[in-house]
Amino acid sequence: MKNSNFMEVSFKALSINEGFARVCVAGFCVQLNPTIDELGDIKTAVSEAVTNCVVHAYPKHNGSVTLRCEIDGNDIKIMVKDSGIGIKDIEKAREPFYTTKPDEERSGMGFSVMESFMDRVEVEKNEDRGITVTMYKRIGQENLQVGNA
Image 1: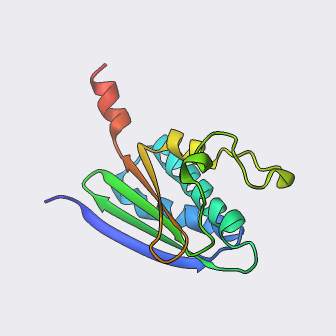
Image 2: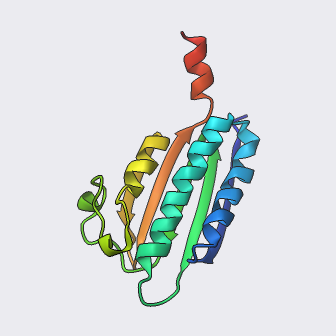
């Protein structure tokens, strides 16, 4: 039988909760027996996605972030969703070094970082408001690559 499970948590879009999100995802992923590197990759990608919500989604008020993880076999799917102001041009926002807040010393590398640590990243506008970033990673790829060397 395939390993299948999910978890979902919502929290206030505050920078202090970025660490909470990392720990939640890491704790949930442990059931897949990831390597330290795989776990680090996932935690870094989640940090970037949550930080984007905190910094960009709610410029005039505090909103919430929903984090959902789904496991199917050795694959993990992580969704980070906000109900904020959204992104006008998603393709532009995904370009390295593009930022809407250069005065705050933002590097504009959030999506590039997510893409470098995960197998696939999708960014979609929600039907009502905000953005959902969906990230995918297969756990155990490093072990497969070493075995095929």
